[in-house]
Image (cartoon, rainbow, N blue to C red; front, top):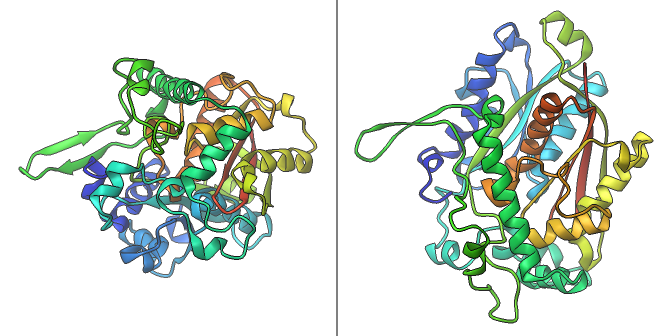
Length: 381
């Protein structure tokens, strides 16, 4: 996030961080055999325009012949990258592939007023006229769309504040138990005074005064609105990476498979209800896999905003406080680095399945243009 410790890294260095860590955690892999990397990155501007997937991989020490591919698909970028990588394995094209995502907003030249007046979420800062000019709901502002959801589903300001508070409380409870130690890496930063700083956890919001803190935040659209900076996820930097392998490659390199990808699904919609892409994608991926929602142990959905997440859960007929949904908190607590969030959902879901002994998990995310993606994974015992 602006001013956060990860803003010390340019986007290439940020993307390379988890790649270094991935190599260190998997010493038996012949990394020269990894010929392809695909990363999600929403804001493909500046340094990110230079095929950030390949340049970050080279910086991390991968082969000079590695192919890089960037998936720039709005909020879906990270999860789309994971699905794209999985399809390359399933087709037999590749046996090993690295995937994940990155987003660096800390060094973007965005006016400070934007950070102060809106959270930087796709929905609040960018109502993309070009992408929507041919749709029936062209140029409806991001906040207006969120307020529409709130009105349509009768989601109150208090509902949203409670959801956001619960997300943050869950994240802090999980962090206190050491849940994130398996997926978070230690990052070392030198500050402006030359001091060496070590960070072991994400810069999550701090819940100080409980729900009262959320209720003190003004609405973005004034007293008639329900959307606030408190119930929308904060701008943040972030990156993640994972290694996907075929069964033969896992055997060859002595890898212990953690999960298998059972199915994935994409959906598109032209309706103003486009923000419900996650729920539609969940329904579709379950149908493809031949499973029922009741068979899923855990669900990870995007929390770009509380109202969006609540609407998705209501569409799925899931209680908004269900303990199997975003069990360890979500983007409302830890932030939403758009290009990385979708991939991060998968990593968190894997760790939750392993820590609980669960079998199935679904991860889903949507963007602001009526498109959603979901993936269903199964823990391997």
